[in-house]
Image 1 (spheres, rainbow over the protein chains, first blue to last red):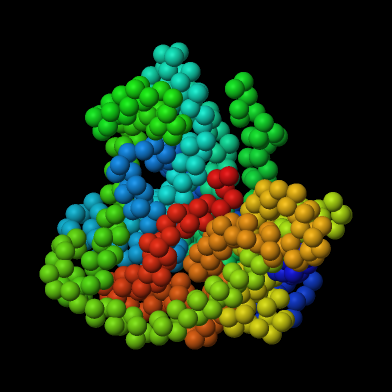
Image 2 (cartoon, rainbow over the protein chains, first blue to last red; image 1 turned 90 degrees about the vertical axis):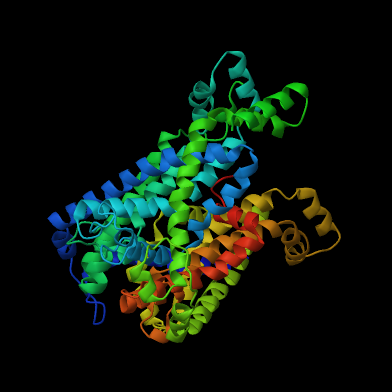
Length: 280
Length: 299
């Protein structure tokens, strides 16, 4: 009974994964024949361009994490409580999750346009800068747009996490005289440890493969200011017709993803389920 | 805010033995100030662009350029929507529907069968291996395998067809679906399976008449999660199709924006139109949709 799933997954998951490795040692223009090429693709891929793409990827990943994690924890903690208007807030909060990345990116492209966008229309010079035309600003925009879409998702995860914290912990903290802020730092945050790890893993591994938002928003530009590894792979392969080199980049992506996911898991310790309620 | 807080604590003090929910509510108010302020602030950040999308899409181009972009429209026009619909969006809509249904139905069904087999007979080497393989699939960024997928699709002779998008979409959906569904099938008490077997039911019988009805909520959740991912998918259609007649909505949005970038109302009308179906779903079943979005992550 597991066969259909297995066949599909091997055919379009496992074989392609092995294919990436194989293609990275060959040369192919995407149309003609595939020739073995040894280490040639790897040699031409390991250049300053790759280093730049790595740097951009890490920068965007780090900034998205720094922005999304505290925001999502605070919003998630808030949404986990019960106040009448929270339900109303929640309905609106999650709308960004429904938009496709393409829709989101073209919306922000229009909104930030220095001539026709929101800032220009309102006549506020600060808002009508050439957001996507300057390197540093463009990175900031990418981080903001990505966060705009995903903060609701991570808030949901944290909301579920906070709701699982045993009430007795708060009661004990209250008896010990802990104030609100103290309770947040001494009870809520430590109890959310595994939720933070799950959410961070998703942010980090997700940022590695962000493609559509950046592709539609900036196409890697201006110049190559937002050319992340995933974009580098696409542009090298499907626009530059260098599938061998693109596969080498893809291989780096796969390895990075695996290493980061494993590191984050290790950070959380081996036994995830037992220790959380220790001493209860 | 303070008053709500006070009444909450008062209630809880009066009835200390009340349900856990009450206590939890009271206790969670403890980070209220900053959380509350932040949530209203973020609400603005979320709502203003959405409001801008909607009001601009019903303005004419001239009005949009001549007045404050946040002003509510005085004269509502659907010209922008007409332009979008004339640009073949109905076709793209049906392409998206075909791809989404064509991928979600088999993906969820296959994953359900696999999860059932793994939980019910998971001691064999074959099934354990399959399970490990699916789990590994969760850690690998599958988008990175797009180049070999492109090659396989060409070799199969289905490049530039909707089937070319459907097949890899099914494969990408399987690992997480198997994981989520197997945690739910595991919760079905073993005695139920055994008593059904004693009554002479086959494995298929127990799958259909026992596991299927009992895991239906999980199946819906998984279907929603995969449906949204595939509906919004961009990379697979971009790489695996070429003919404008095979475009799915996200790809159509992108090319439409390339054509009409100056016509802001039309671009935003296309955003509204492509999001509408999901918005309708959201209004009908908000809870189901949201739990579908975090399928497998918040458990």
